Figure 1: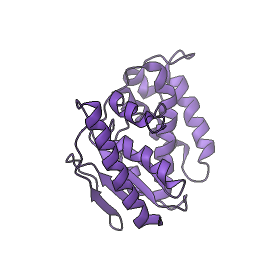
Figure 2: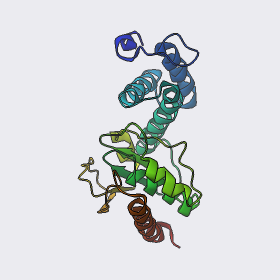
Figure 3: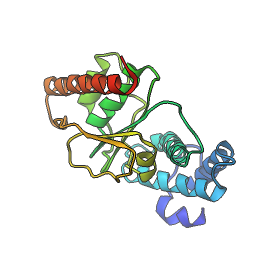
Figure 4: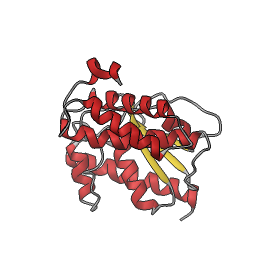
Length: 219
């Protein structure tokens, strides 16, 4: 990954250069996706994922683990879209601009309420640096920990893998593929709102998720 030097030369814990880490990650994922993707495809996805997250990352210590999760999820989505890998359950993608509030709440609530009956992703067209603290707080009220969540850029592969794409009423334009269901939920953006307002947004999302799950997988 010699061409990455000028773009991503920023230290990660225990490594002299990020190239060392990216090469190691690409090697591990090449083994994981052996027979599905070439080493060159995996390497490209790793570099693209790292570079995308680097633009919004404020804490370098988090960048390593986030790159692992983001690159793995994107490659998994691409494998699903190509028919090389199946989850056996409906795939839902929640999209909003910053992926820091509405779409994150929707994803976590869906995982909680679905009990493994669906697979969920979320993304944003202009991802924020971190999640909205008020969103984290109101989710904690329900006993739902969002410590492992982080804003992620919207990529074509996760849209291709989705069966249902839900936007949050913020005007985000997703690539349109035949055979997918597209929904738009007109929800208030929690950014800058009081905790009471954010709590109401959470409850509205929960109600919408409940109805959607009943339609997709039954009560």
